[in-house]
Length: 432
Image 1 (cartoon, rainbow, N blue to C red):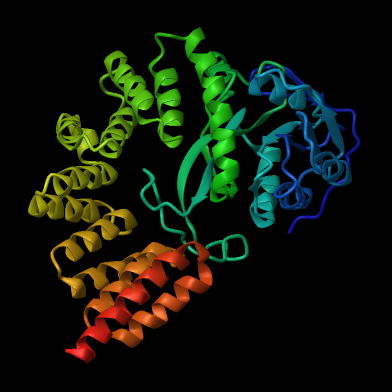
Image 2: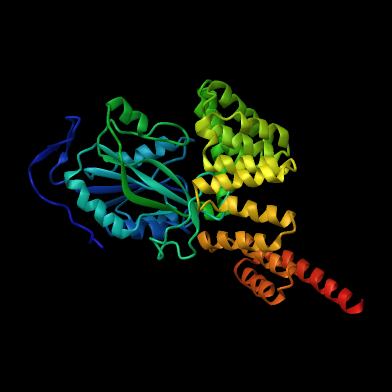
């Protein structure tokens, strides 16, 4: 783990690849910049990890009412009070303006970069040839059905001991401290447009960002509501932008506003029929609305490159099964697994399909496979318990029920109902 470095001295001036003068040679190498509001639960871990390898931490607080400012003042070099103006780019750019490092690393308060990756990053930067770099974010989730869900690879057991899976996202997080590199967009803000105008490349570095916020469902929903409001403002500014329609439609979908989501996603596809994420999300939306035939029509109308995607094949399977076409559904799920052997949602769906066929042995096998790639998947463990009980393996089933009850209190009522039903069945057998 790299130790925190002090500022270097020297008179030499450096230039970026654009020819723009960089800060004086005595400037620190790396500043971390973030915005925060009411993030006391996550901020300490974020800042403590950063302190191991950056020279300066800049926190822009946008109106916290909890202990966030106190935590920031204790662990960050610079803490700014930035009044919230309904614009994420404005807040982020305020933090960039206060940074003195030759490079800027942008993170969120509910994210962590492992210090060993930070040390590698620090060794890389002095001779880095580009003006910017993208980083992959691991957005940890309990929901294996999210498009892009990836099984945890076990590389970070200290950060993710429960081995939650994640969906990956890639965006620019690291760039030279140049005044022309600034964020744009009220919400879903990015520096990529500025870099594109500069003709700058932004290749991906193998330094993952670990995002834990999605595991907190209640807090995430509150953020989604806020993002929806900002997305409406963005759409009003860009009514012909398919991406703005997709972003707002996705927000509405996550908030279970399926009618609104369908309208926005259909408009996105009207503006750009080849938008793959919009087609996937629209298909999911129609399934949620129980418009199964329409969902199948959307799925079967996908371009070839979209139709071959394993997550889309899984959705195609759901469409078929929802219409009672079990054989077609099974084939679609298996094709998804051929392309992505660790796709837990396809395994879950095959388990449910086997249950519907009363093939509990096969169902238990599929749920076991889910747990192999996602050990914290309580629904899979719960359903495997029920399959064992259906097969007469009461001891195995009850032990699994106990494991689920210990780990996931939200299953208590379901398990109690199952136990009452089991007891009634045993009493009936005994009486008969």
